[in-house]
Length: 309
Length: 106
Image: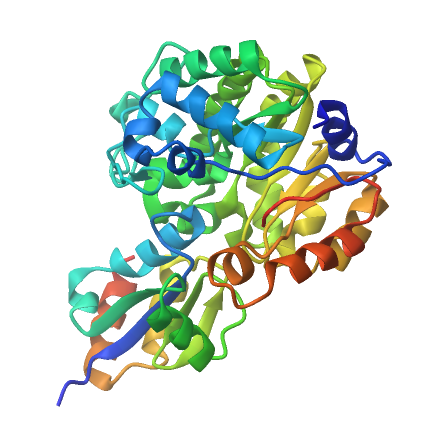
């Protein structure tokens, strides 16, 4: 296990071997025989699951939680809990109300679900070994989608002032989440914005890039390592991801790892992901061992982190 | 015989994946007078049915919206108007009129 190995890769440096980062998420609950909904609401269980997964998988890094609903739920968004998944937001407070009417405020470490996560983080930091703890915050466009619902995808084209207002608010929330993970002690803080793969590059540049800057400043001012996580077929926006200002980025299985590697090398960034989570690990259509060998060969030893996509 | 349009949303899983969640919601949040003329269904590839649907359409990415058999939106959550236009382009006359009403009201 190697915390520094992962940090170096995340910062685009050469490494003697590719670090290993499984995004275990609620799989940690499964490993300790708990249901996700129970697990995610109990700091002792989260700490137990994360520490167990770290040992079991001999990790170089692990997220504290991988749940993009924390921020929205901490502002009062309705959500449904699941026994085998993170919860999912079901109500969008800005669907028919303005920010002022909805009376939303930026959640702090004392609000909503945060105290559970902060306490879990404290316990993990106290006991963890030589591996990096990742704090993964909900990115601005995914958060804006949770708050506004699907209308945000029309707003970013047809009602830009409203979209800008919501994204600016989301930006403040992201920055506060970064502060919370910073204060927990997370060595790496990732802005996770899966929905940002579902828009055009110019929309990404206009709305997502500026909305990430305050959180990135929080991370960098604290001397921590930053990353931007995107999922889906983000080929159209990947150059924008490279320019966003983080030390690196993470992608999913739908991108071509050779293309991603070349782009990361061009910009001097860390990059990770692309193991075939669905095709290999879940469905078994692709042999996981062969997939891992191909990924390691393609990823190389400059800035690459071996991780699921 | 039903003249309903068929809209298939191919996903990883709309519960697990936020991008898939909002791709599905783009369709499910259509106004009732449009929605009553379409049959929409999520096909997540965590099951055999979903995999077969994905392969049958020769889809390339997730999430994807397929309208009457045409792959229309691949990893792009459409604007409201874009989705209405894509439906109208493939709609029977009765639905074209309904969609035009909705479109004019925007």
